[in-house]
Amino acid sequence: MPERAIYSIRRLGHATIDSVLRLGYAARFIMLTLLHSGTGFRRLHLTIRELYFTGVLSLIIILVSGLFVGMVLGFQGFQTLQTYGSESALGVLVALSLVRELGPVVAALLFASRAGSAMTAEIGLMKATEQLSAMEMMAVDPIARVVAPRFWAGFISMPLLAAMFSAMGVFGGYLVGVVLIGVDEGSFWSQMQSAVDFREDIVNGVIKSIVFGFAVTWIALFEGYDAPPTAEGVSGATTRTVVTSSLVVLGLDFVLTSFMFRGV
Amino acid sequence: MERSTLDLWVGLFVCAGIGALLILALKVGNMSGFNTADTYQVYAQFDNIGGLKPRAPVKSAGVVVGRVGEISFDDQKFMAKVTMTIDKRYKFPKDTTASILTSGLLGEQYVGFVAGGDSANLAQGEVIKLTQSAVVLENLISQFLYSKAAEGDAKK
Figure 1: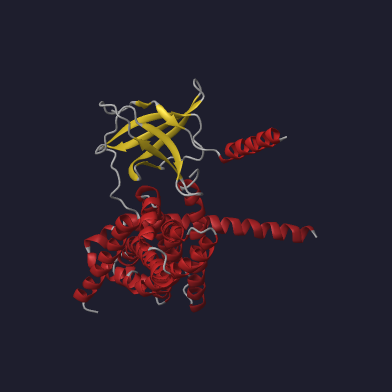
Figure 2: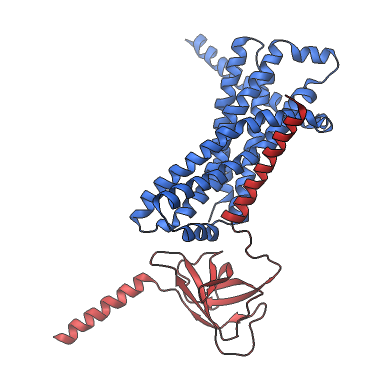
């Protein structure tokens, strides 16, 4: 019996040490990436190439989801607001929920599953086929050549994608609310404009999306770089990227929201 | 892919992102509001501010002329002290009345200015002396009930 107890306690200890170790590796990894990001800017076409893959190719899913989220918000918001006879506040509801929460969060979740998983799989496979080791042999730093451009591409494209998601969502809400249902167009926009504050709502949303972009790209790149060099390892790392970054985005969102919007 | 096509796509992407931010700022957020540079502050004391919140609009004749800044409690007079930031373009006479009003039945509360006839205008840091408190629904109902009860007594 004490054997088993000692065994399970030892396993707990092992798991704790393991996760602390991984956290340390991840912190070292991001520091190295930031230190070596000079190359990514000096040879800008590397970063631009990655911007194309993470940013431009994510556009379709971001724009379409934004439009549909906005349209659904329009429908549901109208249903609820109609009960209180304040349909004209539909613009406020759609804009605030998109700019403050849904825009950054849903865009980050989509970004993690669209671009983050691709990054992890790519780098993991590069590691499995020993391309990274080959680069090191040729005195090319894989962090500077492969990781840093991807990091900056993710970091730059995430806020832009979130802004496009929100703008598209507001347009979707407008389509359903004003064009389809027939809420008064003037009050839709004017109430929205008087309720949405630039500093309080829009800038905070952008700050959120920057933080999410940093977190998601970091997780995706680290999981790829740290993946066991086997087919199984790469697939596990890709799954972990999506799961971990989604959880981190949701957790961070709660923390950021409680700091930004308390007492309002 | 050709590098120039790649550059073109990324350029378009960045432009679209910045465009979306601009749309959010201008069309949704109405950034063309007030800058702190061209405003002046006036104070007013109210017996009861009801549900007035910071950043609520200050309106005169229905036009937004400023915003409510800080709201604090004056423990000398036991009144609420409301700081209001008014756009410099709008001048108000010294005997302006500030009252707390509600837009619609359940809407948000705002400060309404009704101009008086004084020839001197309110300047930075001055206090509005004529104020009218928010209407508290509970007080209205109890007044109504008392008057009903009084009517009942009179009929007897």
